Length: 218
Image (cartoon, rainbow, N blue to C red; front, side, top):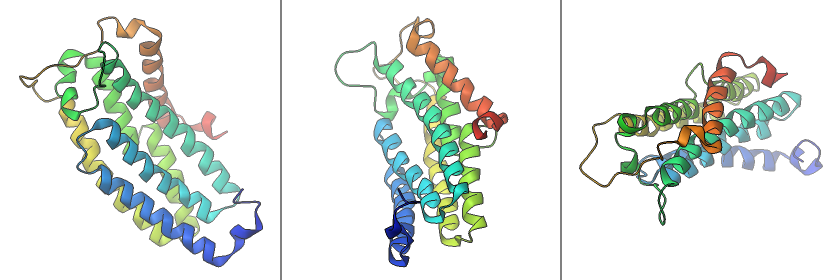
């Protein structure tokens, strides 16, 4: 729509979308910064990631189409992994989901593979090299640099720095000693169920795309 509708060629709308991109990427990260609820944290994080993706809308052109495709694929597998772990930890219980960050404290000592999947997904969300998220974020930054959108590139760098803080907070929580509170845990056979197997496949995809992204790019 952006590439075909004539209205998007106007200067004022271009400026507005640029401003919205900056507000979205910084606002989303700041809202997630001190969020104790993991599901809300991932929700606010997704706002920030859409802000990064709006860089492609600002720049436009065929490279923006490729960037958008690659970014959405990398973000899709990463988000499936993160929310998949929440689902596995929540599924054995009725009522409220295991959404609080305290529910995941010491998860590594109970379910090391689930903790590993969550760690990989959050490393990908942070854009750490050798994960799918790095490929997507690299594309967006490269697109912004190529079009000299320095304000947006600065926003991506600042937003990523803020994001790294709260992503690390979640990852550290997974490996802390267990507290003396009610545990939330996955079932013993989670890895043999369809949801668990899908979760492991998605986690492997995050690493494979990060190391060998050529098929996705093609």
